[in-house]
Each structure stands twice: as structure tokens, then as C-alpha cells.
Length: 128
Image 1 (spheres, rainbow, N blue to C red):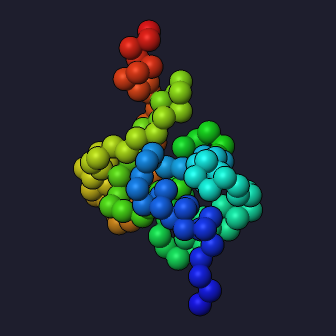
Image 2: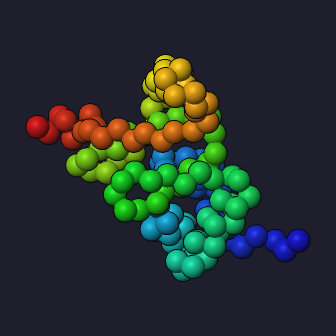
């Protein structure tokens, strides 16, 4: 098996250290370039695609037209600041009770759901 490239190694490091929550390809590219001095979009894209195929990453759609990626972990929801774009995880699943209710009303066993909350982060709220 060939050794991963420095770009692949750096993408993995960034995702694992979670310097931020949920990275876009462009954000990863900027950080990789900052660390390594150079990298191209296709190399970062290939690394992310490989990690996604291997089941290491989850793709997140926050409704702004850009896919973001994070290391696969326990299920959680996300909240996105509508002003600055900051993304954070909501540390609990707020829909557990709703899933049980959906099951009792429809007979469906809920196996997945995605919710993205929108609002203003503390910093943006303080500016109002």
C-alpha cells in the first residue's frame, strides 16, 4: 500500500484535531497551504473523498450550498451562525423524543435524521 501524501496526512491531522468543527474543502485547502506551503484543490478533494469512502468522515449540509466534513462520531446536531458562518455541534440529540413520537404515529422506525439550527453565535449576538 503506498504511503499517503503529505497533503493527505495534513488533512487527516486537521480533521482529527478538530481545530474547527465541520470543514469545507476550501477551508481545509487554506489550512493545508498554511501548514505545508503549497497544495492544490484536487489533492485535498481526493484526500477527503478517500476518507469519506473509508467511512471516517460524515458529509454535512448546512443549507448554504457548501458541503462540510467532520470525523465520524456519535450522532449530534449542528448550529450555524447566520452572520459569521461559525458551526458548532449541539452536544445532545434534541430529537430523541420526536423520533419516538414519529414511530408511534407512523409505524416507521426512525434510523436517521439531520437537523441544522440557525442563529447568532455569542460573539455576533454581543455586537447587536
